[in-house]
Image (cartoon, rainbow, N blue to C red; front, side):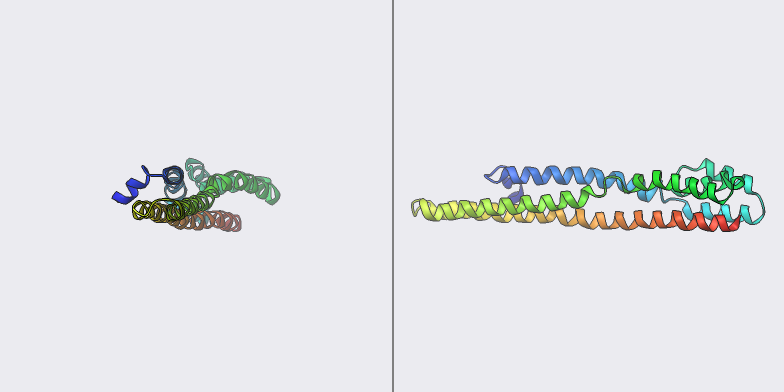
Length: 203
C-alpha cells in the first residue's frame, strides 16, 4: 500500500490519478445501479406475481390492477399496463406493454455500457504508465552516471509495477461487477416479457 501511495507522488502520478478518477466514477455508477437493479427493480417480484396470479385466478381483476398500479418497479408497471388495457383488446394491450417496456428497459440498462469502457481506459492508462516507467528506466541506463543508475532504474521499475497493478486492480472488479449487473438487468427484461404474456393468458 505504501508503494501505491508513493505512485501518486512520483513521476507516473498523472496516469495513477486518471485511474483513480475512473475507479471512483465507476464505483459511484456501480453503487447506483446495484440499488436500482437489485433493490428497487428486483425486491418483492416473486411475492407480487404470486398475489397477482391469485387475484386473477379468482376473478378479482380490478384488485389485481390496483395492486399493480400501487407498485413502482418495472415488472409491476408492465402488469399494470396489461390490466388497465384489458377491455381494449389484444392489440391495445400489446401496444401498452411495448410502450412501458421501451421506457423501463433503458432505465434498467442506464450507464451500464460506461463500465467496460472505464475498465478498458483504466487498463490502457496502466499500460501508458508502464511504458512511461520503462522509458524512465532505459533513459537511466543510457544517460545517467553509473552511481545514479541503480536508484533511477529502481524508480522506473517502480513506476512500471505500480501503474500495471493499479490499472488491473481497478479494471478487473469493474468488469466483474458489470457482468453481475448486466446479468440481472437481462433477467429483469426477460421476466417483464414473460410475465406480461402469462398475465395476458390468465385474462
